Amino acid sequence: MKKRILFICLGNICRSPSAEAIMKYYVKDRGLEEQYYIDSAGISGYHSGDPADRRMQSHAIRRGYDLTSLSRKFYPDADFSDFDMIIGMDDQNIRDLQRMATSEEEKNKIFKMTDFCQRFSYRDSVPDPYYGGDSGFELVLDLLEDAVEGLLDQLENK
Ligand code: 4NP
Image (cartoon, rainbow, N blue to C red; front, top):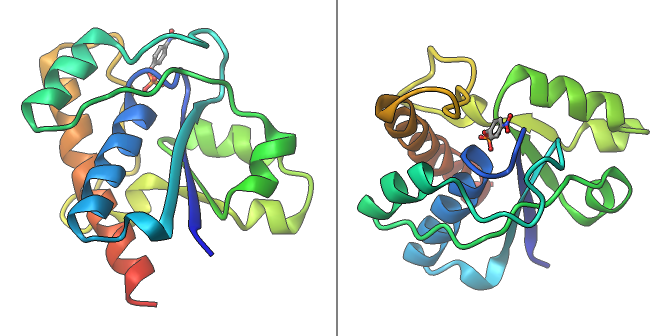
């Protein structure tokens, strides 16, 4: 059975679509495409149907990540049962997910992205880059690359 992973942020136009693209890239690189189903969603529906933020896209493509997914809202009823791991980008995402979970089983599927970081372990969230400058988008990519690598190492060593 495929491992089903859902990345969550607030708008699903910056951080979680990047996490999705980086995870897909690393999974392909390791020849594991048949073993993973990867998606992303937003706590808010403000940007539903929109492509990823242009600034995020331009920073990501320079590292070879093509952000193609369109924003969608997180749907607790479907997504808590459809996915094995639901990974939020910051503490507010985690609080929102915990609030929407309806059982211990659902709560146990919730993780924070930075918990998988190996190099950036001193940071406790992937900061929202939306209102900041270029360095915020680069930091998002640095943290996500680190966390995706840690996540895959953990899943594949099980
Ligand atoms: P994201 O960034 O959660 O990483 O997609 C944001 C995008 C849009 C907004 C906030 C955060 N917004 O308020 O519209």
